Every structure is written in structure tokens, then in C-alpha cells.
Image 1 (cartoon, rainbow, N blue to C red):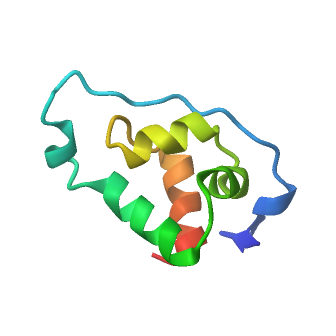
Image 2 (cartoon, rainbow, N blue to C red):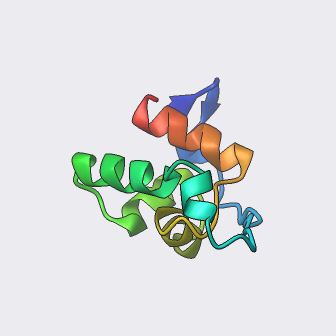
Length: 86
């Protein structure tokens, strides 16, 4: 799959830093990004493991995104947008 002129399948897995917030109302402040990611993933019928491999991120990172406990790094966010055609 290509996005932004880059072959995502050819890239190696990169562990990106997690961005966590000490704010307990983080989920409402982010507009439920995790819920959007989870719904899009389920609509495609893929597992967290499959999506994390496609995005070249750790499965733990994806899990935290879906739980609204962390947000994607901008590079991962660009891959998410390309993968789901957002």
C-alpha cells in the first residue's frame, strides 16, 4: 500500500513514542479518537494485531489509542489516515 509516495509495506516497524495525558478527562478532550479508530478497524473486519502490523506500530500503542489513553504520533496518524482513507 502506498501513501504520500511511500510504500508502507516496505517500511520497517517503528516504535513511536506514546503521548499520554495526566488529565482524567482526556477521552472527552480528544473527541474520542480511539472510538473512531476502533469503529473503522471493526468495519474493515481486521484485528488490532493486523492493523498494528499494517501501520508499523506496536500492538500496545494501538490498544492504548482505542482506549483513549494515548494518541497517535503524527507519523502514525498520517498512516491511519492513509489506511482508512480519512
